[in-house]
Length: 438
Image: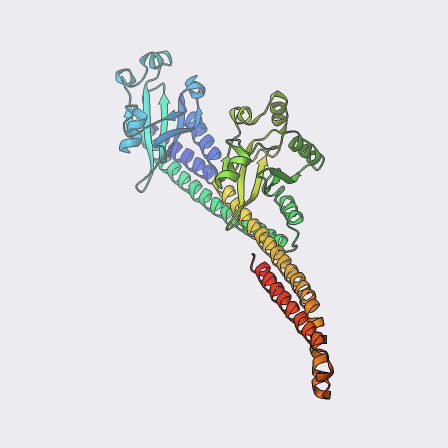
């Protein structure tokens, strides 16, 4: 009867725990529910929930509870399960439960700790759904583990495995929704940026607008750098979530303009055409970038947490670079952020190149019009006297008065026409040579 009563109690405990586990699908809730149930209802001296991380082949401690000091200060990671001799690692590796009521004989545990805490029993049960390992449930006890308790622990472990599977499924759904929303936001951002880039043929104004568009959606700081014909680097625009800091940033740029030969940062990106991404900004980066102690102090005041620089590279030339940095928000850039920034930079570079090509075309049209105006004027200059002389001779021929013109006058008129024709030929040759570029 006592055994039956114990079994019924465990069933009620397991049912209540199952309802509680299904109440909230997040790892912290599941972990705390599991270990608190083991301590309160199964009399655990130390209860632990280990979760399996496949990417590192390790167990990570999700939750721990119990009166033992090890519940707080014990290891939080069991690495390299495939070759780790640890007993819990063996349970995970073999996916076979380990039940012991003779911990004094278990040489894989610290016997001094076992005796000091007066531990008598251990149940380590793998959490498996199908063929997939989820983790390991660990129950240390100060009394021998009865058969009905072991069976109840096995059932409880199965429920925990199912709860972990539900949590993972929920997390995958949430991650998918977040990725879908993020992709939508990125697409909308690029679409808006394209509209801004197409709105004006004044690329400095357009790039400044794009920089403002990037803040705060993509960065706390955004800067636009242009590569000048003399290889110097010009800070074209700076934007920040706090407008009061923008002028301070310009002043910093004037005091410490980029060194074109620097082995990192904007100069390096402009030389190589390769982006730079720093998910974290360690002190070593600031030390390498700073020109002097005052520069280092100012850089520290920026409070940069993460930054990336991408090139503005057209088909045939390097135009400049875009810099993005996160400070106040504490955001950390990832590869996805770099891809978005590079896409934005490609669109901006294309817009700049199209603007420059348009300007060059307009300049060519203006030069052509000026050339034609000049050519028209220059060609008319020798043609006018030739035309006058020929008209005079034609009237004389038609009126039969040609013989009345002295021979010297006729010779002078013909020689003048010859000189003008030679001059005209020289003008045509010069104009054609200039039109062809020499």
